[in-house]
Length: 312
Image 1 (cartoon, rainbow, N blue to C red):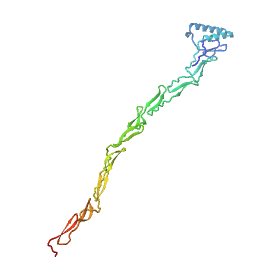
Image 2 (cartoon, rainbow, N blue to C red):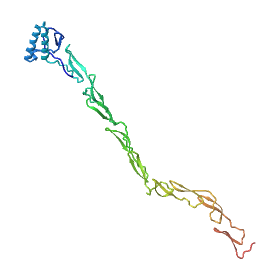
Image 3 (cartoon, one colour):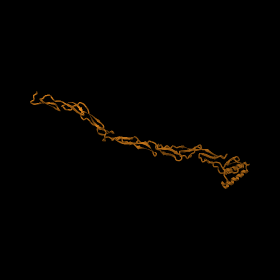
Image 4 (cartoon, rainbow, N blue to C red):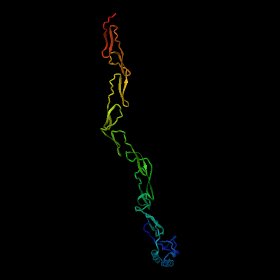
């Protein structure tokens, strides 16, 4: 669709017939279209038909023929060689009356495709560079429609919202969303928060009263984010028990069978039995009828003389 050249003339009757739609005057081809007198203006019709008669009558006069041919070119309407392609130079070949469409290059144009940019002519064709419709959003399927351009269709794919405080991230209406995580560590000695970059953050709290869940400690309190207590003493001062502590039950006293001292001078062979020190009673009988025999738990056997007693 560039400069349009060439002239046309309606010649229903021609002196020397060329190809359809053209006439030849003294070897000169004229680009022409077949236009009926009905479509011409009255004056043009008269002029053209007059020229036809003159041409028919003067085929033997070359010089006059050339003059008439020139008049024909000047008076005849141009032939339309426009191919509606901005990337071609359109013209009419005066030698054969045929339209010529010369390809053009590097001419800005519009290929009518919204999926291309920087459109320009290349060998007579309008072409552009395809655009990228990637929106860097994992929650959209990115395509391009020649009429509408880029189209971003939401999906339901798994994704990563870049937030360390969420879990189970997935696409919802074109946006990556996750469920908030719980940062509760069930530790009374920390302040629990969440940082989008680092995730859960547990800041130690010192001095707060707490319960370390250990029955073997007392006076529990927070130290450097940990609940700590002071160990209790489970010593029951009973040699007949093995003293231990169970974190759940607390102090545990397990009977043993060790030898012991029940603190009673009136027993002997003391041994632990069922958690108690027990001995076998001793005999204070001195086989003397003239003494009263008894035992004092503190000092042992006593033999008190019987007054006026004579041994047999």
